[in-house]
Amino acid sequence: LRMWSGKSSISVDLERGVRVVATSACLMRSSAGVGVSGLDKKSYKFAYRIRVENVADLLDARKEPPSDDSGESSVEHRAVQLLGRTWRISECRTKNQKPSSLLQRLLEDGALIDENNQGGDAEEERREVQVVDEPRTGAVGHLPVLGPGEVFEYMSGAELSTPTGQMTGCFHMASVDFQLTDSAHVGNPVEALSWASDDERRFEAKVGKFGFLFDDYNED
Image: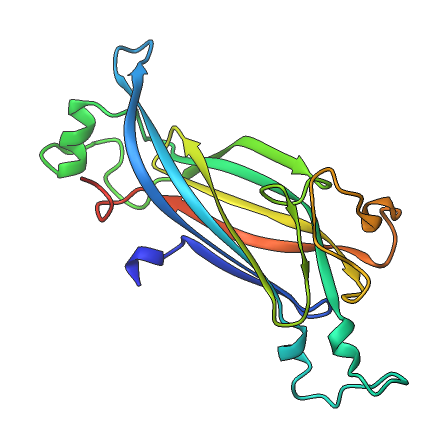
């Protein structure tokens, strides 16, 4: 459980029947060269996995689904299409945190006492370092259509200059007819992209904050 503490989030849109699960993991720490202070600049590479699910069937399981004239359940037509995404990536640093050095290592190991921080937790600073605003380009080149029970999953990555950070955002989506709408790739014609931004069929599926954390478990 410690591995995943703060590194994952689950967000559910009960009205639209969309669930988004996000998890992260640290891949490596490397030196990015020597900074102006003469100290090594560290770079932390993280991977994150995103899972977008159409859970309309689960949410409607306890209800008596209405049927159309053909006798088919309306839930079968409750499909959604992923149109794009918006991400905000931040680095987190405690106010007394300094770049890695021998002195900092001794303080961390308890060999020395930091007289300026003898009690309580240090206050954390967050700095937004990247904004991805791509509401029309899907995710990793795909604009998938998900029927009830279907899933779209992908992995991507981020690189930070601090050992901790966080990410949050949303997916831009649309409610579509599963029988009339096909999944697409970037560059393909997509009807939902022509709809007005205030069209009631368009919506944002929020992605709850999840963290990036380089800890001793991942350290070589």
